[in-house]
Every structure is written in C-alpha cells, then in structure tokens.
Amino acid sequence: MFKRRLAGPGGLEYFLYLPRGGSAGRPLFVAVHGISRNAWEHAQAFAPLAERYAVPLVAPLFSQKDFPAYQRLVEGSGAQRPDLVLERLVEEVGMLSGARTDRLRMFGFSGGGQFVHRFALVHPRRVARYAMGAPGWYTFPDEARRFPRGWRPSRRLPGLCLKPRRCLKIPACVLVGEFDVERDEDFNTAARLDRQQGANRLERGRNWVAAMQQAARSRGLETPFRFQVLASSDHAFMTCMTAGQMGEAVFRFLFGKIRRG
Image (cartoon, rainbow, N blue to C red):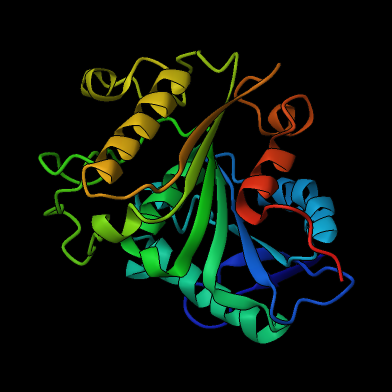
C-alpha cells in the first residue's frame, strides 16, 4: 500500500494499492470515503478484494479543510472542484501504474456515495459502473428540482454541466444495511428531502433506484439499477464490510466473476 500526494495544485492525498500480478491494462477501482474521511480504512478493507480481482485500487482523501462539501461537488479551497481534482488523480495513477483510467469502476460509502453518483452525472463517459453504500440523500432524476436535489442546473454552480441522459446508461447499485434506519446527527433531515426521497437511508435508497429505473425505461433504456439490503448491518462502514459482506457484493457488481491469468 502506498500513500501519495497528488502533484500540482491541491495536493490531494491518496492511498494506492497495486496487485502483485501487475496493473497494466487493468481497470481502476476508486473507493471514496464518507464524511468521517476514513480513506485509509477503505483502502485496507478493499485491498484483499483488489488483489483477488487483480485490479489497482485508489482511495482519495478529501480533507475537511480543503474539501468541506466534496460530496456535493462544491469547490474547495483554491476554487478547486473535487470532481476535477479526482480526474487529475486518476490520470496520475494511470501514469504510475499503467492501469486503464478511461472507464472507472467506482464505489462510495455514505457521503462518498453522494460524491460518486454526482461524479457520474457530470462525467458519465469516465464511469463504467458504480456502487454506493447508504448515501444519506441523492440527486434524483427530476428536471424540476435544481442540483444537487435534481437534474436542473444550479445557479450556485454555473460551471457544473450535468449529463443526465448519458448517466442513465451507467449501471449502478445501492447497498444499505438492514438496520440503517436511524435519523442520526449526520443524516439530512430536511422536510423537503423526506417528502421527495423518504425518511431514512433504506427508504431513500429504494426510492432513488426505482426513480432511476423509471427514468431509464421512459427513454427506452434497460440499464440495471439495483438495490441490495446488507444483513446484520447498520450505518458503519466496517460492519457493512464484515457482517454485511459489502465488499464482495460491490466487486461482483463492478467486475463480475474473478478473472485469472
């Protein structure tokens, strides 16, 4: 496992794992932390799976100081958009490892899931598939509501170009623990989100998946949008990984069967 700092403006730290068999030509797996900023924990937990599947792994660290609202793609210090900084990071990783960075496989937990599905909405050509572990709330396929609640462009983020039709072509999976129903201090309890999305993370995940399925079908697309409940799990990353077997479910969805040789 390597810890590195992105060259150039921003200096984003990240953890990089390269499988023993080499990374050349292999698709890159990106794991994005939630607001606890536990990027190291993500890297450590996913590294055995990255080794089994022979894929390189990168876990960026969006610090509270530099990227306080990274999950909504809001500019951080130095007017840096977190999604654009991540693009620079994966290009650097590609040069270091020889991995493919044109079509990313992405995962995010909680706030990281918010970041990942919004990254896919803005950069759909860069994302092959993505999975999310229990985001607190979502950008819904609703053209009447402004980003980040919906697909209508935001006046506050004029440089953010949303590409919803292309995003609807990207397979996605939401995984939520069966006990993840608490409205804790980190959960956005705004009444308008309750009305639009549901009262807890389980409801909001199911409702977002159903809304994306409907939006895709209305455009003649059969893109798979899946929802999975994790057994014996609450809103703790490591509990989801151990009791809920979230890592295995994520890798099966993103990569399919293990490729050997």
